[in-house]
Image 1 (tube, one colour):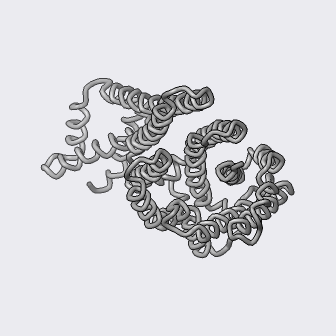
Image 2 (image 1 turned 30 degrees about the horizontal axis):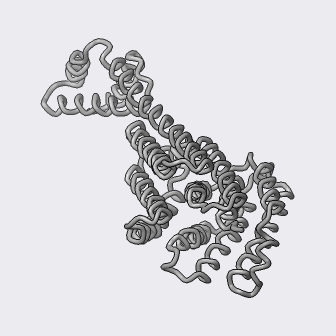
Length: 394
């Protein structure tokens, strides 16, 4: 279109400003649409001015403002719906705890309803994010990750309630996640600074909400687990909540490690990516349960918490790197050494009382409270405490 190209490109932007189109994704879409229409008419033989006048004249007054309003309202409805399901999940899970403590019927249905609400909230927020930010890349990876994680969590629920389909779902979801994770790690390492990275953008945007949800979930599951220990009833409901907490906190933890500022102290970025892939395998493979021998699961779990703790310390902000974090990590390391030796039979079962008691739990909780301003440390401690409570049996 000759030397007038840039002038008309700016003219389209000015026109959109006049039309008060301010919503980024919609503005980009309309811009491309107008530009395409003008280029099409130029190819048909019209001059650039004629093409511009024809395209603009075909647009009804206030049309774009109406479209923008409807689009934003639709997206906000989706986001509000996602929040509603998130709150609903906490309400249902809370009622399931009350019903369990009072030995009322319907506990299982409330629990399944809460899990379904969590899954629905994740799916809605993912679809809304994809629709809202069409210009950003990574939508397929986002959907594949969310769906596979939900299948993985479903397999645990089926196992706890002794329902069929547990093993196939768990093997399939673990296999897919182990294959998918290296691609996600490489994708993040190459595109984390890009404004078009949908995964990084949505994770950063929703991180505060995810962490609040995890803290509430940990508190609920912890109360129920301690009640199960105190009143000697089967901790099946608390086990589900703790597993869900570990899963969500774990995936959130790895998403945080993908950000370059997290692993800035590790100069070899390729080596860091390999380490993350190995660490993810240590995190995920124990979920296969009896498909792997107990000793191997113990080695994997202990290795995960040791290496994840080192990464947590190296990834903490300098302003938030305090001595207490190192002290807590040393305490966690000692705990997992003793826990592993007990499971290997090197130490007798009487040593369980040495590591599984309320004072140790209080130390972990204090570490979590002191590290609430550091997302990576907070996610790590949530996993540690949830796993500690899951293994805590008297």
